[in-house]
Length: 428
Image (cartoon, rainbow, N blue to C red; front, side, top):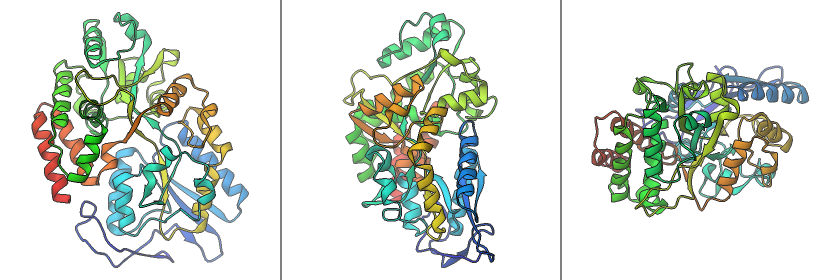
């Protein structure tokens, strides 16, 4: 049993059957040992290169500079991490440092009294970061996580396959996009790779279409009213159904994972599919899972949608960050400050792992595609955090589930909005 004990003020219903836990034992490996040495447990989702090696190197560098401190790393694939964190939250036992995307999931952990307020202990580091990168980790004026990268979701595509299909330029409108999909199919090329089994990649399409049809204000209003039946949400489902009717995804996409050797990223990374809608981490995962397509890889933003009130310069995105457990040792905060320094951010950007979060750091981005992403975010007129992170976990989960049903042909656009609304109002 750990020397530390964690108190729990409250627990969200989606994470546990019990609403109140008085205390729980921490993990066996964290905290200060009898000889005065400190072990910091760090759980992250950087299973692909270059993140995997980069994170390990940072841990070793910190240990070398701080004798007596051990950074104990546990790395998990995205979905396994989410599942494990739900269990840990229910037990009131979070690792010292853990991956987070901020938003509603982090807010739930904060409400449970399990996450440290970093506003004061990490103030110097926070002051070096951009407001856009920090926003997902700030709740009621306080900062509960530090970003490691930030960016947006867009289409990563194979220029050679586009050229083979006679597509001369990336599509700028939804009509042009559907036309490009058809041209790829006519050329016997799989247009889009999608990890239907994991569901979250599919929700990017519905969210972007909702943004384009109804605008960001509609999404913000829904978050307040718990009502997702506005016309723009229904229209988003109708537009997505238009795409699904073209059968643009690889065979068996509903059973496909994201980062496995036969998953979404690998299909694009091996040149077997023409594009995927994914965040700024896509190139590194494509390379790790499928080998990568080198200079044939390029990026274009989600297109404008004719008839919508949303702007084509509004982006969906977010990034990866880390939060600290309430009773973690001081060294956990110090380690996050260390990996947030410009030297580490420069190495992060140079490796292609992601985009830096420091102010005036676009110059650190060397990769041509990632620079496009960084500049697109910098010139965007609106920003929306991924819905499965922006909203409460149960609501975000319902978005993913309902959109997957729409893509699988078992739910209508109206049923999608009704199911999400019912969950939001039940949580509400």
